[in-house]
Length: 289
Image 1: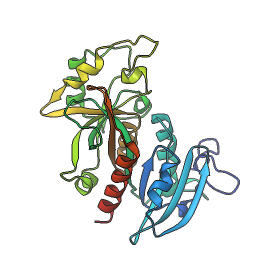
Image 2: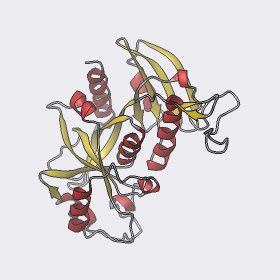
Image 3: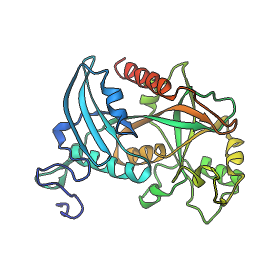
């Protein structure tokens, strides 16, 4: 069945609506960064850049790094933007834009997020790297989809019980990463755990400026959560959405986090750009290994 024009929106040049991309513009290996200016911090290591475009906060460059074709895309901040980016990337590879029909043979993308994050656990040092084995969706975006087959219900139930999770909030959804990509990206330089993906930077992550928050002890309860040795390691705003949508669409994803702050200790990186640059070089080297 042909997909309606109002559902699959294409620009006049045939590119997908928000990303301004055509199927030939991207590789099947894709790096996500949040900040549009960080795209060139990744691609400055490439031998060649064959394509680039920008639409709103979505900047894309595709090129060659040591013989491997890689696309780098800025997603902007938040799970709502990930909803746009992942659905449109999937459309680029798995929907025929001429017939507007879903392809019989599907393409699976390999997606690596290189992002920044704040640690929850006091033993996770500022400037270290956290590889997200799981993403905890506490922002509600994934609840719009049929997610029964991708959830980890036993961990979710234990998390809800331990934190005395408010029934007025969206129920947490816990999704694991691609074990293939985890194996590729992990080393003695990475820590592993669960990354909590929030719907905002201030109240949703327990930051208090002038507004009171619903549960000012939530960070401490999350910090003390332990499920068979699995801990909540850090906060950010994209990972669970990347994992959930990737699982639903048949793509592989893994999130790498440069820890720029420790929320338990109240500390912050003295040279965040150096840490981000180190993570970029680390991930690129792993992707071609």
